Length: 291
Image (cartoon, rainbow, N blue to C red):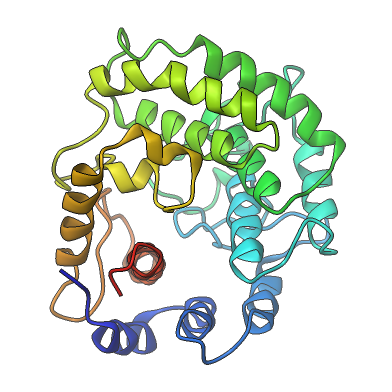
């Protein structure tokens, strides 16, 4: 089963942000990565971080860890590396909000007076999800920055402590594991990352976190391991991945776009998210030979 790229293109041109339009042009081979980077600059702040709704569920103008994560992932998508001039200032921003244990919060308090989606609640404690997501994005770029030293230490300790066989399979834990796996896929210490994946594997299989169907706010195999050349592909059988690719392709709606599974709270955020998840679906399908 494959998706309809022309229908998806019509959807993006009709509904999505300028950023996703440039990402689509890059995917289709009609432009390089530079327009994506230029569009990304509209979300950048003087502190080196990113806000202004780059993460569609956080409408605050202030920089947030989630904004940095998204920006670094998009730089990688655009073909940039850790030497890009946007990378070090973004990591400096993360360092400025890092807690004593080396992690960053899920969201900063300064986002709360602004419109935001229901899951985003400020807390002073470090977040495994956000720290892993940001470290994974920076490692994927090949970045070298002092922030990564403390973040890596925090993450190795937290990942080693995961006991998935005993944990309640909640969506929040699913995101913790999802971005922990992204960190293990991207970390330059391959031997340690492979060993950690091997340790996680039995608990992940027994945890109930891996959904057998894409129904609701769940995590399916391709959410944990979207890219065919990643270390984490060892966690899933070929049959499960192929079944999930069928399910992902069949999720394309009649208007050409995909829909996200978490609760909708804002018409504007919904339109922006649909553009984001449509681009993600196309990229995953393309990478796995389905487009």
